[in-house]
Structure formats: C-alpha cells, structure tokens
Image 1: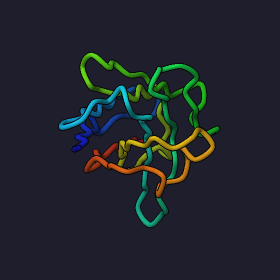
Image 2 (image 1 turned 120 degrees about the horizontal axis):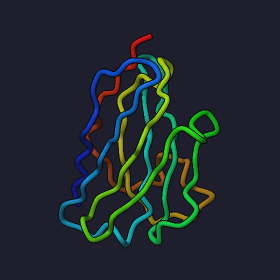
Image 3 (image 1 turned 30 degrees about the vertical axis):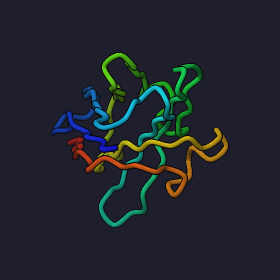
Image 4 (image 1 turned 180 degrees about the vertical axis):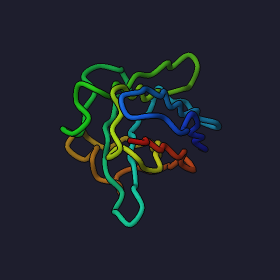
Length: 124
C-alpha cells in the first residue's frame, strides 16, 4: 500500500488549501485515514482522522472549525480542506492509514502506512 499526498503550497494567512491523499495498492475504504503535520524542529503532530465510513471525523482542537477531513472511497482518496490558514499551520503534512480503534487515531505508531508529505507554508 502506498499513499501519496499532494496539494501543498504557499498561501497567505486567511487563505485556503485542499490537500489530497491517494492510495495505491490498497482500498481506502478499509482504513481510517489520518492527517499529521510536522513543523521545522517540532515533533509530528496529529491533525485529525476520518473513519472508514466517513462519519464523525476527529480533529486537533487547534484546527477545529477551520479544517475538514473527507473521503471519497470510490476515488480511493482522502482530503484535508484547510480554511482560514494561520502561520502556525506551516508544516509538512502527511497522510497515514490505520485500522486502529478511535482512541489510537492520534498516535503515529498506530498508523501502518504513510505518505511522503506535502509542504504547506502560510505567510503572515
């Protein structure tokens, strides 16, 4: 199973970006899909995740109300819509796949597969 994240770029504060994560060699509908980010010099941080059915995504408090995770199982793709971006959102964003229970979604070692990361830079 390979994950490929794309859609990052440079955006001004207050702007929007949509990241996509495509799965190859597997079926996205069998996995919970998570998004993580890592800023320079910082540890990898959980952003959120969406279960295989698509219901009740989970989010980091700092992104609630601004970020939305969705999935299109027919396209084997998961999305991270990021609105009202802030400079603190600057990071490399990774998608990941797990079959762990919801209480483990925020734990990076619980995710079996990882994408290569896509860089998001938010200028002030």
